Amino acid sequence: MYVGVGQAMDTETQELRCIMYRSVAVNPMTKPDLTRLLLGARQFNRHARVTGVLIYRHGSFLQTIEGPPEGIDAVYKRIREDDRHDRIEMLVDTPIIRRLFPDWLMALNAELGTLLLLRILHALVEQPLSGTSDAQRQMVKHMIAELVRPEMQIASALPCYT
Image: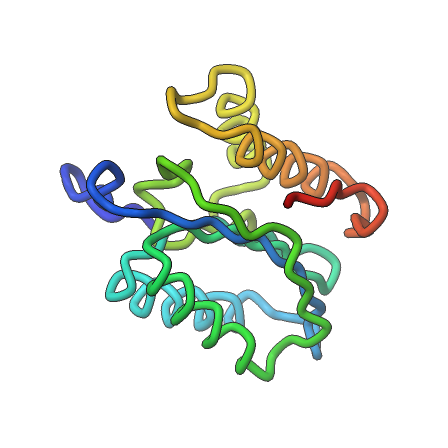
């Protein structure tokens, strides 16, 4: 969902943080389940000033969220307490200087269409925005890899970001 024309989250005047995590759905998510999840996330994220993208494939989630540290903390606390998934594993937690997804309160590959999301992510790697960090480019590459893999098995593929 886009924030709206001229309503992109402020990216230049605040400290920003980005996290990526993966988890496993407790039960397979249906389209109505994903719609409910997205509606709740978008409403909460708007108030927390957090944007991002969620990939759901084969019963697993991979999500990147970005925003002010206090917003990330609030959203991640809500994520950890959500009983629709478990085995939550933090993959990346890094400060950033600009958002990769300033207009997306929460995008979902099933909603956007995997091909469209792949094109958007590929464009971010090929022509990065000024101020995009190496860690952000690596995260986007991992999201692309997840979208083209038949199953989410990324534990050994992800480098450690410190």
